[in-house]
Image 1 (cartoon, one colour):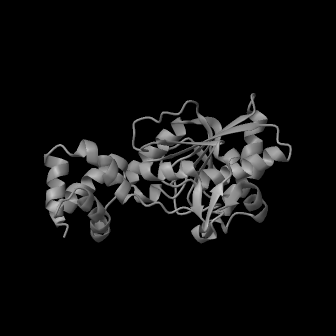
Image 2 (cartoon, one colour; image 1 turned 180 degrees about the horizontal axis):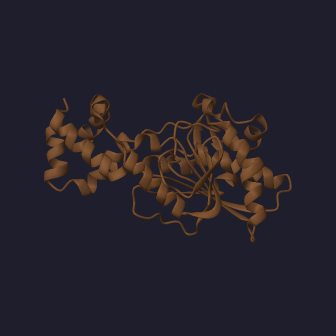
Length: 272
């Protein structure tokens, strides 16, 4: 079993590296998720694993696998649907009125396997197809390298497509020819509209080519300590254009933080 002392070494590293808190009640979860790494490394116990990671310079190779093992990748298409209604009816029209070149740049932070950025792409492409006079660029990022690779493939379990509006499902999702696979895949045209890259939100700065007009950073800050929440939100604001929109998860708040943000809807904020 994972001892308390080894759990504390691992939890301190995890929070320091990517911000995810690992309180004592997460010890069994961490132990369960790391058993696959012990098997891959042909190790017999967690003491040997921690010795390899922290005392034998194994961290450089193992860090990415450790973080991949502990990240929670819960995601859905059109999760918190009010946000997508606001995106279509308020955020994009506001941005395009003030944007000279009519390019809307969207960043989906902590995007997991890609359901969120593909949902955004469906909304924006539909707006363009209905006569919207703008173009758009969508970036999806996550700290977990495994999910970024899955996101780029655009393949999802069939039951995940249930929240997708029927007209979007017909236009943007292909059903696997082999019915036993019970999978759907995002059509190539939409996949080309979204690019994915690895990113750690605790980095000192974010390697965005241009400031974002719209940022979705939902349901990740709840895993961070209050100081780390503040640091991440400050960096998000620094990566946005004035007048840009920030979407947070419905259980997240900016209360008590001094940020250049003004709330305009439930967990939707404008960068001053």
